[in-house]
Image (cartoon, rainbow over all chains, first blue to last red; front, side, top):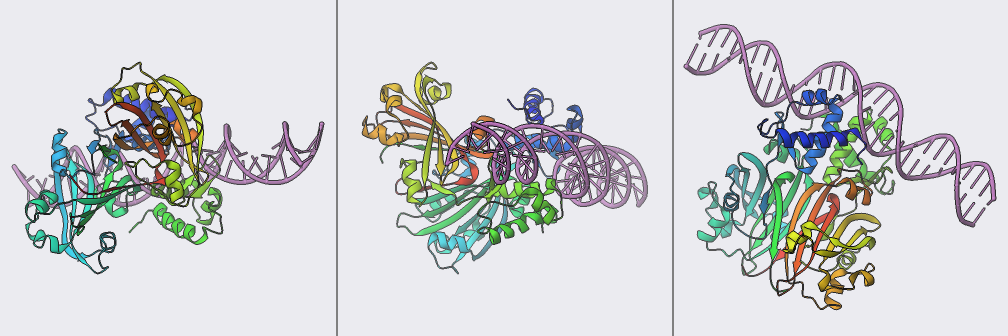
Length: 236
Length: 236
DNA sequence: CCTGTCAGTTGGTATAGACCAGAAGTTTGC
DNA sequence: GCAAACTTCTGGTCTATACCAACTGACAGG
C-alpha cells in the first residue's frame, strides 16, 4: 500500500530497529551509513526517520544521533501524585534539575489565576528526567502569600508535597489544558533537542478548597515520552 | 537567535500569514511562488512550512495547498456532551459522515472491556467535521447486548444520546488514554491529509454504573484542531 | 445545462552534492 | 598522568533540479 520509497524505508527501519535494538544499544547507525545501506540519499532517509520520530519510536538528542525511544511514561494529570512517585511506580528512575528560582510577575499566570497583572510570583523552572533522558521542562508560578519562604527552602523535592506538608494547603480545584505544540527554541534547547520538535503543552491552575489561587504551572513534554491516562469513576 | 534561514523564514511567514490572512481567504500562495518570493528553494521553504504545521498554525489538505488553521476546538473528554453540542456551543458547525456499519469482533476492544477475544461488537466508523474541515475519524465498538438494533437505527446522531435515551444506560465509569501519534496511512486518507501527519489518539472504555462494559472507542484527531481542557472540582 | 476530457498547476517525492558547527575520540605536550 | 589541542565523525542546513500524480479549471461535446 505505501508506494513512496520513504514509506517503504520507514517499514524497513522499523523492522531493523526491532531486530537490532539490543545490538546497537539503543543508538541507530549514522545517517550516512543507513543511507548507503538502503541505496538512497540522506534527504530521503531523513524523511523516513522523521516519520518514525513522529510515531514516537525514535528520537534524536543534540547532534549526537538517533536513539530508540523508551516506553512512554503513563501520567494522570488529574491526580496529584508527585513526579518522583509515579516514575518510580513504573520502575523508572526520576531526576530533577532546577534551572531557575526567582520572584517576578507573570502575565498568563496572573490572568489564569484571576490576579492583577502585576502580581509577583515565586517562579521555579526545572527540568525533569526519566532514566537520564530529559523529558520535560516546566515553570511553576506560586502565589507568594501561600508559600512565603518557598524559594529559600526549595531544592528538588515534590512541590505539592511541600505545599501540603509545610503550608497545609488542600489542592482541591484545578483546571487543566493540553495542546500539542512545536517546542520553542528555548524549551528545545533546555531539553537538548532540535527546535520545532513535537511536544505537548500542559497547563494547570490550582486553587484550594476556598477557591483561593495557589499556583499555575506550565509543562512542556517531549511528545513521545508521554501517555496520558485518566480514570473516572462514579457520578456525573 | 534563530540563525538557520528556515527559522527566519518561519518568522516571516508567520508575519505574512497574520498580515494577509483575509486577503488570501485562508489559503497560502503556491510553494513555488513563496520560494521565489523568499529567494530560496522549495526544500527549504517546506522546512519552514513544516515548522508552522507543527505549531498548528497552518495545515495542508490533500494536494490542494497550505491553509491557515482555524482556532482549536476546546474539548473535555471526561464529559459526555455530544460532539454536535459542544461544537455548536463554540459557534462552529459540526457534521458527521458515517464510513462503516458492521458487526464483528475486535481484539483491543475486547481486551480493554474485559470480554472474550471473539466477542462481536457493533462497529461504527465515522468522520467528523468542524466547519467543513475533517478533524477526526473514530471507531466505536458497542457491546451488542447493550444496544441490539443499533446498526439498523443509527444514522449520524449522538451515540451517547441514543444509549441514554433508547436503552437507558448510565455511562458512569470510563477510562481514557491519550497519546500523540503519526496518523496511519488509512486514517490519514480518511482525513484527506498526508500519511504521517501528526495526530492525537484518544481511546475510551465506557462502563455502566454496575461496571458492565458498554463500549470502546478510538478517536484519531488532527493534532492542530484540538485543545483538551479538563476542570476538576472538589474532593480527592 | 450538464458531463467528460485535457492541459496546466500544485504538492509529493527523490537525487546528488556541499558546507557548517557541535560532539566525540585521539593525539600531543607538559 | 592529565589536560589541552587537533582531527574525525555526525547531524543540521541548504542549493539546484527533476519527475510524478492528483487536483483545478477551462474547454468541447452531447
